[in-house]
Length: 403
Image (cartoon, rainbow, N blue to C red; front, side):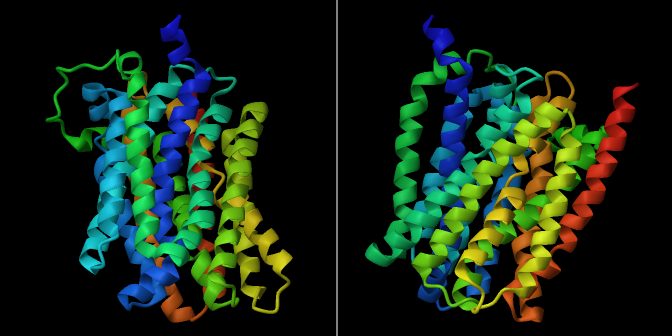
């Protein structure tokens, strides 16, 4: 009876969601306090994009090994390791040296990259085809929820106690959660194989995604979506402060609203995907709205009514941040039997590559455009490519399904 309670769907979802939220909060915190952080180091605000790229370079490094780690150590132990790395990286980022900030960001990324493979492994055991998109989407609300926490708490803590304390606070919370969830290990890691070797070729898992064309195209679409999503999360506060003359607290509130809209979007799109039976159609609709919203960004300035700024960024939050749950459910559905965590980790490498490229590329575009609002509009070409990838994924999914 105790085992069934510990492995019940709500418990698995809540723990996975909270771990994801803490990792996400630690990844977004530097962007939420970017004006304070970059000023303390005497560098331009646009360079926060490089720091974010360091995070997701780290995420790529561990995501590809996620399947092997889950087999050897168990899904719950991998989540604990994720939180430990996030805590270490967050604390290191608080050291007032650029090298420490970059290294800390990379370590946070190592932890962030370990969140999805074990979560997908656990969720596939407690979901059915009728609720899978919704459940995965609910779990993925942890990402924007972490953004809400970063947007509301990060600027306030930074202004009250200093930017370093904002980063250290996130690290401490991650450590506490790591200890608390240890109670689930004996139940959730019962299927681990302690004899599984770690001496595997990481390219073998990558080959899973490349072998199946539907997995390949879904993963490439995620590359585009993630580049847009993290570019949006990275530069929203800086855009509001520099281009629209918002205060840091006001900009943080807008970031929180945008991330909260992402929470609503993830649940909504997951529900629609389950009800419609067409996850690819949902992804296409999300992409079209994101493209239109990004193009509209070019017309807002310091004279735009504040409510319009909130509404536009909330709409972008629902779409540009709301796609992940449907995507992960598709990867889990399309993955070969017994290889869900491996396929998820391999696909997430491609996703993190988009994240890594996105902020750095957006920083470069800003250097040419000279305006963050124009930069967002120009960046709409990225999700446009993602729309093509979605259509390709749908075509090959139907073909492979009929083999």
